[in-house]
Image (cartoon, rainbow, N blue to C red; front, side, top):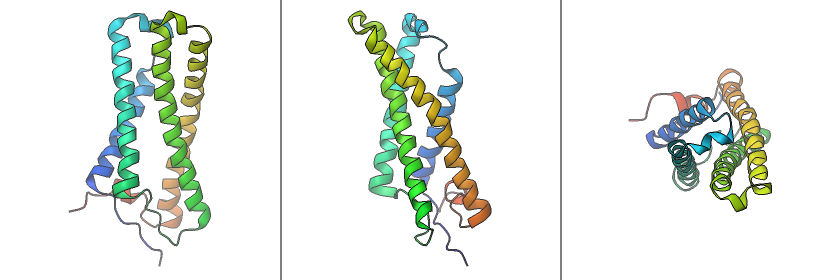
Amino acid sequence: MTPQAKPHGFVTKSIHWISAGLLGYGYLKGLDSVSQLADPALLQFEITFALALGALFLLRLLWTKRVAGTTRLPAEAPRWEHMASRAVHAGLYVGVFGIVLSGLGIALGYVTPMLGGLFLTAMIGLHEVALAVLPLLLVAHIAGALWHKLARRDAVLESMTGPLPV
């Protein structure tokens, strides 16, 4: 019999799914051009959104490291699964923090003319790379969860999607 993963708690599940929703929202409503930041209300919204997303992912990182635990993989899972899980999760954090910090850098470069030019170009480039890589990591994350549901049948997927613990 395959060892079963223990469920995540309410806080962990909430942070996970709110994070997923905010990332989806960010991708759907993203800007078409940096010049849109000329609208002060939009600039303020983008800065606030980036700070909120960054704060949520920092909370998520600290919560999982200090309180909830970083993985629900059974200890008996193959070493390659543990390594792949750590690599994908680390990549997700690096990708999100890269998007947030480069986005804030774009805003700073846009409103500070002396930072324009090379700084703004570099921030836009970093932002575009992070925006391109993050969906690949999300696909790997989802594929891993489905692997555990369909092949391993060890309740790793259900640890995040199942009913909340009593």
